[in-house]
Image (cartoon, rainbow over all chains, first blue to last red; front, side, top):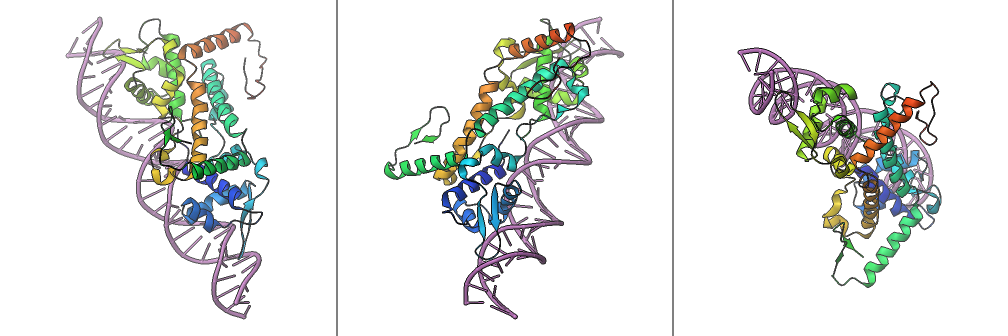
Amino acid sequence: MKISTRARYGMRAMLDIAVHSDGGLVLLKDIAARQEISKRYLEHMMTQLRNSGLVVSERGASGGYRLARDPGDIRLDEIFEALEGEIAVVECIRDAAICSRADECVTRDLWCEVASAIRSVLGTKTLADLKKRYERVKEQGRDSGRGDVRVHSSTGRAVK
Amino acid sequence: MKISTRARYGMRAMLDIAVHSDGGLVLLKDIAARQEISKRYLEHMMTQLRNSGLVVSERGASGGYRLARDPGDIRLDEIFEALEGEIAVVECIRDAAICSRADECVTRDLWCEVASAIRSVLGTKTLADLKKRYERVKEQGRDSGRGDVRVHSSTGRAVK
DNA sequence: ATTAATCCTATCGTTATGGTAGGGTATTTT
DNA sequence: AAAATACCCTACCATAACGATAGGATTAAT
């Protein structure tokens, strides 16, 4: 169970637009450069995001992308599902031959709970929240960059 | 983002063993028949579960499988990870070139939250819980089986 | 020895993933 | 008008994962 690069790159691209658009358009070229993602590959993700109505594009010279809505109005599960498809689906929804089995139903309920749990993380946050977090992290990195790194106990990651 | 058949079948197999072993061994053949899964295919999942120390097997005629531990001592995330691999991993954990970027860290934190959410569903339930649920559902099905089908409000599935 | 069970390994077709590429279309700038 | 710029559409490709099947090897009871 992994998160695809499409979802990761796409999420980063959305954040990048939210951060770098000052009301204007953001260039694919610039997103690709900042995020260190192949421009050609990122195009696909932008297409998916556009088809899902999360960004709008303008063509031609000095075209580019911008968010279709206010960052506070774009939930992260929308971004995720645009790139990754429906969250944690179990296919057996309308397969009566399988779903009539009580034990199958029990495990199916479990998978539904898993899907809900994911949605409750991504569905309660917006791009504005992510942007806020980004700015906080960036700020902290600036005034406490002295080389000492605190490590989070459970994840083993650098923290702060 | 889908849950693989391996995980679904394997979880059902574990539940099947929990339900049908009366202290003794459960035959692969019987699990496969009850769960309507190809015996040959289910073998693979049993191998994974055995290698993860969740079931033990006895070979030879009148061999079979049984749970390695008490059902109450087998967490569902253990089963899941045995079949599906580590939950919602992001690969960039020790890739410093990527992780030194503040914005990447922000999205990475998000994926970690997603993983935690999944773990908090599967890690707080045991096979004994699932078995209990199964028996409750089975019980309800027996004394209210009059052809009318109740539909679950949120999932839209038949409950009964 | 026969039988019945798990075990190991290989194979196979299909789909998904990650990524590249060529050429087309729209728009601005010169 | 033409060049430049930027998005857009479609195809392709290599690899890996997925779902499933199969042959034969072990192990142990009868």
